[in-house]
Length: 216
View: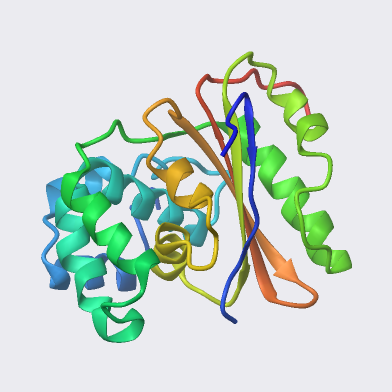
């Protein structure tokens, strides 16, 4: 896969200042995560411009980045019955996370969040599927670095969405997985909106550098 400054991928999903929602928090604790790790990974906790589900997306991505082996053991290996040992996308992910070194956690970027949310809203209202003019949209971020974008369509919750991106089933390039585990990408923006066709759309924009925040 050619990777310059922009990576464009679409994933079709299978149809307070407190960290994540209490339900997700309890779920993660019950599965074996400790509170210290959860609070450290929840870098979006004070991002007032994000919804709770959007914050949970950031948390889930940061967990797989900061402790890939543990994420693998808790969330991926138990899915063997769903995907099967013969599924190369699944087994490849298990192997990748087993060998993956910890990565820096992503920080939210208000400019990226605004770009992601705007596109989620506009595409959701029309039922559009795709990235559209991503290279044009991302110019608003105003930083000369690496940019990437993942888009989900479906009805999943935070962990389901992130795991779908990681497995990247039927995406030969594994581009969504690559984006989530790219050490060069350090900032994240998330926008979730109702989608006319698929239920919701979740747009995630990444960058290697922090953008400027222009007036609304």
